[in-house]
Length: 76
Image: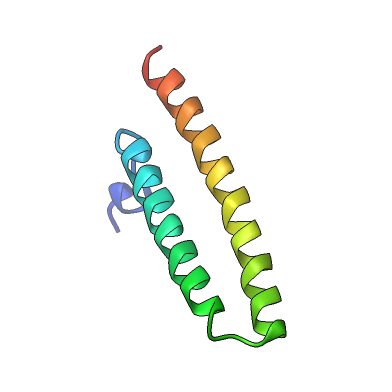
């Protein structure tokens, strides 16, 4: 067994900002689709969609904070 086989991969964060931006875009699209679906949902379905979109907004805020952190770390 080769010693390199157990060696962890290097931490490559060079494209983290780009990946997070894609995740934000995907999340925004999911929110829009969910809002369109609300037109055809009953009250329980609407409440579930609203709750999920609230969590999505919180996730987007988190992604944006991470992007700021990554940008600052890349500039150091």
